[in-house]
Length: 484
Image (tube, rainbow, N blue to C red):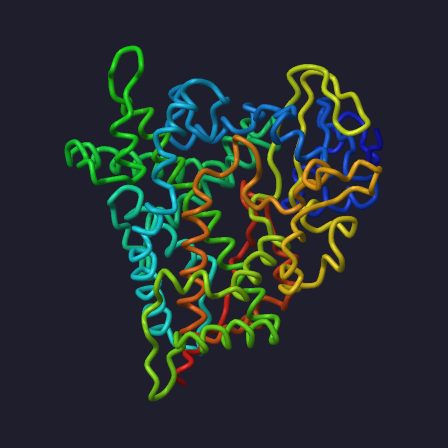
């Protein structure tokens, strides 16, 4: 199996510790192929971005479905107290995981997501009002603004709690969680990170960890204080409160509730927010795309102009905005906020043409899957029109004479929410938030990337992977109301 050159003893550790290691891995994939070998302090690993191999690893029907690399994921248990309580995100695919996933899955059905749509639109308008109050001369960090929007939506829709973040004022979750997640990322990629407990960086990060624990504990107490949820409440919080131990009939203990609530808060707002800001960045830096998005919104009567008030965004409008939908897909292709996921082999496993031994770390690299010249024409070009072809998300190997079943020999090359049984359970909710948020904000404002961001390359150069892909200093923009 091919491998990049490595250093004595540490192997590729310094590359793995790079803030933008996803770009390093993608560059290596371009040089060594969609399956290559790495080593960190003597521990072997395999990086995979070949579409067929990825599909098999993630559990396409009838395939191998490698389990999550628990040593990586369970670092996140630090955020809710490290009392042995794993969450739906950090646990193996065991009975507890299945019970929780089954309990909350109905919360993300299309019917229940539609019921939360008014929360998303109301919060998006409140954020737009706060941005308008800042004025167009002062830049706004739209990545932080996106986090404020999605945090409020997740809080209200999932747990009946309004974090009040869209006002752009001080907010404890916004100021603590990103730093806590950076510490988790450092512990995932550096086996010796715990030795740095004495540094100011680690001490400050752990203060954020402790504060986030307090926020989640207070939210759990608030949920329980309301009493049993009514039957009409289909929120995630309500489903978690209803969940019972199948053996004892007991409800989830507080530390287990904290793990699940913390997971849905963390996973429900940060990933969606970064996707929102990257999409606005792509719109702002591509004039033809910006014009296309605005024309589609204008045709639906959603753009507010002088002497022409905009009408309210409705649920049915989301399906009509096909160009905006293609813009969103293209943004998620170029900037997958989950740039990769770690798995591991529990037995000797065939990955592509290679036999991988038991106990090997396997990193599925979505970033290269989405940006490989072997999978896409002109992958570095932001081109929403590529999505006019419904088959664009599939990779079709060269014909081998067995073409009777079209789907049997093609594999997804676009996986913003992963694939298989461990795919993102909240993807319906996330897409609704993104569509409503982008439509509302683009109908109100013209976005221009702030000069201090250094243009497109400046933004790309500031990318970091701290569990999710985002930029070191946000994405600042000048937001000019169309009314002006």
